[in-house]
Image (cartoon, rainbow, N blue to C red; front, side, top):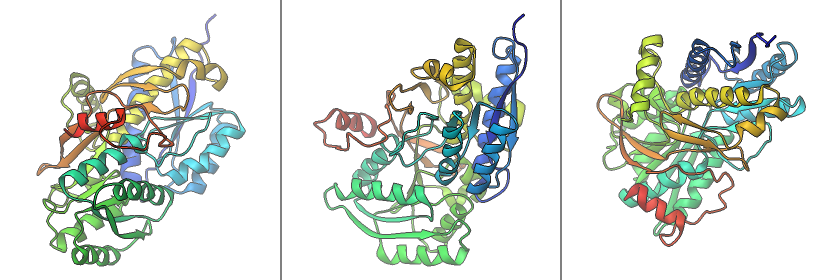
Length: 387
């Protein structure tokens, strides 16, 4: 008789804490995908059963709860983590117990674990393209500001490299704020930006600090049409928190925006809103959280098991028609082929897509192909994107 037992999976996203707005969207994307798969018959008739824990955006809690999911709940696969500090807290757990983490968030690259599938953007799928676009359209004098943890430090290092390679490129300042920084701290930074007059600001501020930065920017009277904030981390979730009036005119690089006009995206959004309403704003992290569940489900249907040794051969190289386009998991580095896009916030709080790739871009997490000259294949792709 076929096994009809439910398949337990761990879900580690925060409902509370500084980055909970985007993590709640990742949770909604994960649960939405699980519901759709279960409604279609599950995995060979077996229901996926999510076991959710709220780590409160605390890396230590992520590690403790990951251990609990593995040891007490006996899960083999965990969907979770937003901040890189939380991913790095969970990796030792999944490596120790030979479990799998599916990580749906952009990150700083320069990492590989056999026990992780990375479905968010690597630096060559957002940072390099954002640098090329901003320097071409605004200039190469940049002011960098980020939250005080590993992802902003590493992303600013990478962005600095890209900027300094450009003619006239210079870094005017590099500032960091705590995850719970006050409005006054952001006002001081905005005043410094106004005084230094960069061509653009590169922000890797995350969580609740995002709206404080954009509010301070507006209060300082800086015009985003001439000096925008260019970000990797400001998505529709953060825009919804701060309001369109503060976000309008600013720019984000991401593989997915909910404004993407494609049949697959329109259909997924319609089903999601029918089920969850309009409270959760779909965004790049929501979309990755959604499609990675389908990648897992298809791989398990083929392997017949959710144990990593049986699952990986079917997960690696697998494809799925996601809202952003057809994604593919690379066999060699466990990262995902994505579609780089650049969006500018409009008066409705949506992203107008102002540049996009016509084809998927494979992740290059170690930036082996760092050059961006027009004679290279990579340079040719940049030209194709930013035209």
